[in-house]
Amino acid sequence: MSYPLNRIQHTVPVQPGSGKIHPPGKSPAAGSSFKSVFDEKLRESAQIKFSAHAQERLRSRNISLDQTSFNRLEQGMQQLMQKGGRESLILLDQSAFLVNVQNRTVITAIGNESLKNNVFTNIDSAIIV
Image (cartoon, rainbow, N blue to C red; front, top):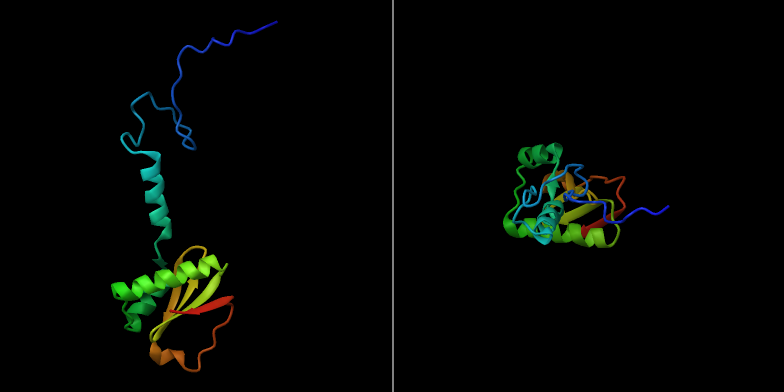
C-alpha cells in the first residue's frame, strides 16, 4: 500500500518553541530578521545585573560606578567567564564586587572602608581590574 506524498494542500508556518500557528505574513516579529532578534537577546543576556541586595549595598555604602568603571566591571566579568569562574570577586579601584559569573549578576558590593580585615569565602576566582 502506498500513500501519496502530495496530500498536504496548505501549510502554515509555526514559530519554533511557541506552539502557536501564525498565518503567512502575520508572524509576531514581522519585519524582524532572525539575526536582529538573536542579537538583541544576546545583548540582553550579556548585560550585568545587580541583585536587590547589591543595589542596597551600593546605596548604603555610597559606591557609585561611572561608565568607565562599569565597562571595566563588564570586562572583568567577561574574563572570568572565559576562564570558567562561577562565584568570583572583582576588585575595582577601591571597591570589591562578589559576582555570580554564569548569571552575570553582582551579588554584593563592598566599599573601601569595609575591605580591610574582610574574609571572602565561597569564591572560586578573583580578578583585579
